[in-house]
Image (tube, rainbow over all chains, first blue to last red; front, top):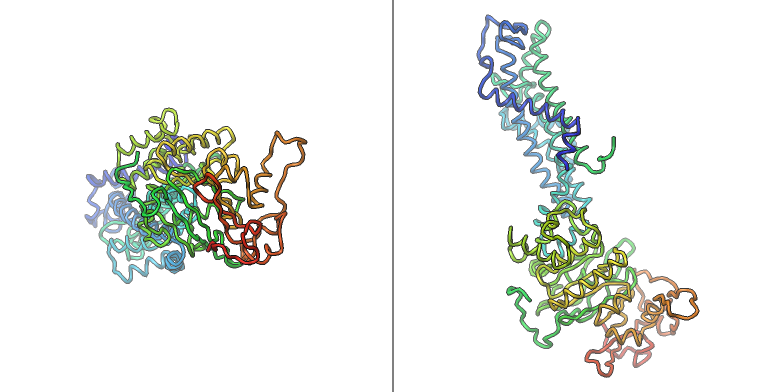
Length: 278
Length: 353
């Protein structure tokens, strides 16, 4: 079964372990962090990492504990990433399956809209949306979600096109199924594999996009911690206090790596065409 | 045996008449032009009878039946003319929703390839329940129980357990049994079987045909059997329609057709059946040539280039349909061939249009 293949796939398992670690950090940070992530302490600004002081990852230019800020920022980054991916996946998949299933004019117009969205570089599109809507966390979700809509639309449309003429779809029609029934009962389960993989890869890109927006000052607003705005404020002190940039950067890199490994692993596990490739 | 929901208001004229197809014409628009895949096809199906639809590949057998249920993909196909009379309604012009509720409940289909006709990611029980769920609102335990009962009826061993398997765990023959279970789960009045045994090996073929025959007799379901196998027709059918190039060229009771084929094409088909008892053991007979392209057909008998008894008139006009009633038979047989037209040179008989 798929679960057995998953646990035997070391790539997928590594990715899952990394993601699980971050989830654990979020839960812990919800109840406990070493220091108040917002409390400034001018006396202890830019302290290097040391176990003795309790600032394991050091402090930033306001004397705030970096580990605590990373831990709190984790929840913010993941929540935005998950919500944005969910938004993009739901809307994009609906548009794509409908376009692929109905074909003709529907297909034409839906996919042209997707093409237009696609033609913008994703960060530029996200910046544009943020500039129009204003700098709020919810708007980050919307901006990243909008970037994802055409991607999910394409993936799901392609998958539906490949199977919409399948005999079992004809058979379902001949036993009285309507379009909605065929879409949800027969088509969606069949295109789930590419979608799951796409979701997992999108989560990682969403982390990057969110960090980039926050870095540019368009995303999560200080003093609330997010990895992106931590990097932005670290820019000034980076030369004398590299730990202010290294640890938030590592946090981003490791989570993105985790989602990517998970996505690749899931594709290997779930896609029957790659099943026996070693 | 009928569900209480399947009430049957008697048709006004002939109580046993179930389905009446008249002048059904289905066109496909292609880049080369219009293709009349089904051209002025008319036939009648009576309660409980088995009608064979015979012809070469591409003769319009399948499209005819897809047209009846309005399942022809549009574009490129379109049913452009004709009437499909069923229960006082014309299925060709009825609202989509009216036709949809008939599909699977009153008229259901079995397809040619059981390997691709089942959804690979859904359990067998889920798929057999589908029609029950759609038409009778059955859900959960009840639907499952009925599905298992249907699986048992079509001879799936250990049906209770196997209902939870996926299609790839079933063999081809078993999958076709599942398809039959699906098609018959709502006790339809009409079962359309589109070459149900073509994809199966010979030993399984006989079992599947027996199953269809037995179950349809049990529930008085009328069957339209699409096939190119005259052996199957001889064993299964009451009446036969022979199709060529989108038209029905001859229709008759099965005994009449086999003992006295009128159309040269039918004769050719019958002569093409390999016979082990024929003396000499010579070469296998075949009809020379191949079916014509259906694009922009001229007004002529489409069979004339291959016909051993082609006459001048065959090249100039499509033969009228001649009907005659054999002694002792209550239903007429028809043939569209100039050899049998009562007045040569002018179509005075009823035009099939």
